Length: 164
Image (cartoon, rainbow, N blue to C red):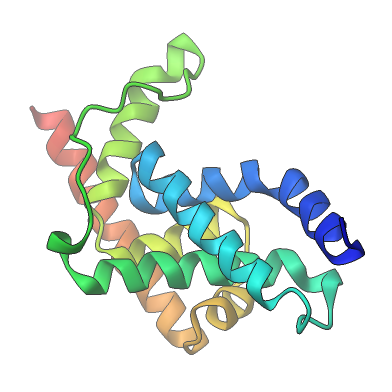
């Protein structure tokens, strides 16, 4: 095994689970999240030799993951398989918060993809407005407006669920 492969393997082992969690929050499906992470790390591996700043790999990987997700969403629903709406292998949160967490995750999936990407990066990944803007290749103002709209959409969806 070359040094390049060993470095990549170590990076993949260290970061793939975290990226899978982020991918799940973006797409709402564990199987699709695994596919997104696989596509992301395939792209990272292909560019591994050219990547000069290995210290910034998390940011680069996160950006690649979000762009892969958004690119997939642009292609349309007919280009990828659907595994169904039942998600059998969800992580089980603590019993007292389980219902709230499931409602939140179900509502997050219904938020438009660009707004969802901003919400996940800002509030789950704890990225600043500037970092999120750099990852999504947009302005800080766009991040702020997408975050505000995404939060409003999420609140509306959660309110609808509570009324039911």
